[in-house]
Length: 105
Image 1 (tube, rainbow, N blue to C red):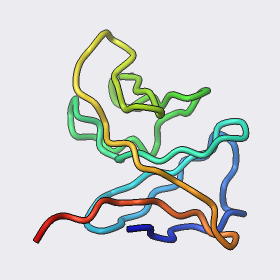
Image 2 (tube, one colour):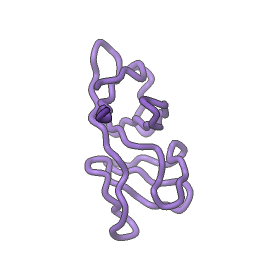
Image 3 (cartoon, rainbow, N blue to C red):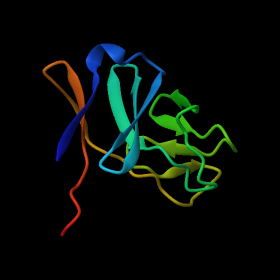
Image 4 (tube, helix red, strand yellow):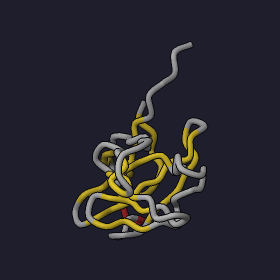
């Protein structure tokens, strides 16, 4: 299900926006001309990455500098390990929307 979460005008390159959607803490960010969305919580220590850094197609956790791909959620530094969830994102009628899978009942 698609959820409108921010106005497109709120996006800025490198700025990380955070919102609770469907009981999940979601981050949305722009890097260059691309928009990405991922889960906010770093699986390493459970810290929110909303105060982290975005560079190219990666996000860095502010706590211990773990780096994750914003394309597939994989850990890119330091080596291999847990992933973060990645969510499809789109612009519709000037709103940033994120697709969160519905849980089966």
